[in-house]
Length: 193
Image 1 (cartoon, helix red, strand yellow):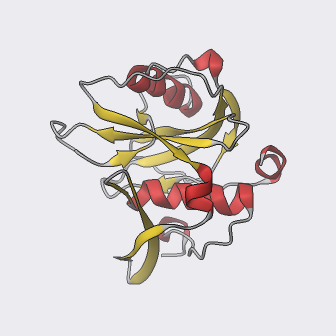
Image 2: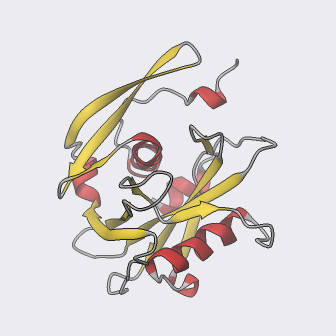
């Protein structure tokens, strides 16, 4: 995966709007890596109850988007940035709220203790990467945007649905880093308008 992501040229966006980043953290579990996902608190004003990667909006004082992803992961799940081996970025995506999001892939030690910030999260999931590689999808979402229809896998894990941008970023990782060959169209923000 490291070699494949090092050779990958992710799509970037040059938007004037707000930016955010997320950390797609994988454990170095020798029995099989796990993907770290969070369930956002039901009390939040946006994206409440949704499954997401640790991350959030870039602060004016953040030097770059990688710093944002690591800062947010520390705030949300108590992950020390020094424990993350950054592999590289995936393609930028645009949220439904016009937020430009850059995902970064990182590897963390299997034994890293993660503690949810209960002001933001209800829980943390450690999902075996093999679960996604075997494509145990719950259903496929049909999303219409800019006159095009896009099909995005959705997965159910321990009663929670992993869908939308989170699923899209996950599938990009699976396809680029692990040759999963899950069919996925180019996101509309990267298409010619």
